[in-house]
Length: 182
View 1 (cartoon, rainbow, N blue to C red):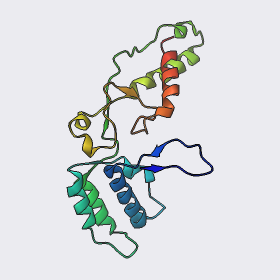
View 2 (view 1 turned 45 degrees about the vertical axis):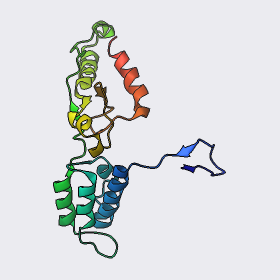
View 3 (view 1 turned 45 degrees about the horizontal axis):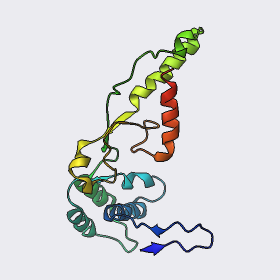
View 4 (view 1 turned 120 degrees about the vertical axis):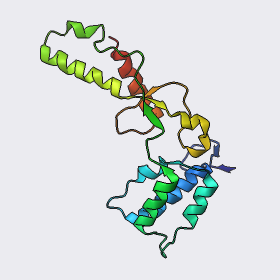
């Protein structure tokens, strides 16, 4: 196991190397960058993909793609591979109705006298309903095909663009969700 020995860092123990799935998806990402180029490349997309079949089958198919000297493949070959062997990014989290959502929360909102401000606050409050997600049942069935961890309960994502839960956003999500009850 490797240890961080940089003079610019605090010793923090062993460096945990990536999983084989993440390492593979990073290779797909690098190939996509070489193939597509910087202009329309989304670096976050590829590491959020999950597999349709086992890793060894997917890796073999990927390794057999015809490549140029710089490691790129034809765009249609890469797109065909992704369509055949990988699930879409974001398919691991699915919408779920929050069980405790109430359209008009009790508390401070009823005391807001300005109708425009009250309507705006209710509109902001209604956004919570759209941010509730649960982990797809496929993750618990086949965790080896996914990068997302199976979570036992629904979660709130910080925005509709998010395809996973980030621990550093948890404070703000929890703080905001506590406010919506008042």
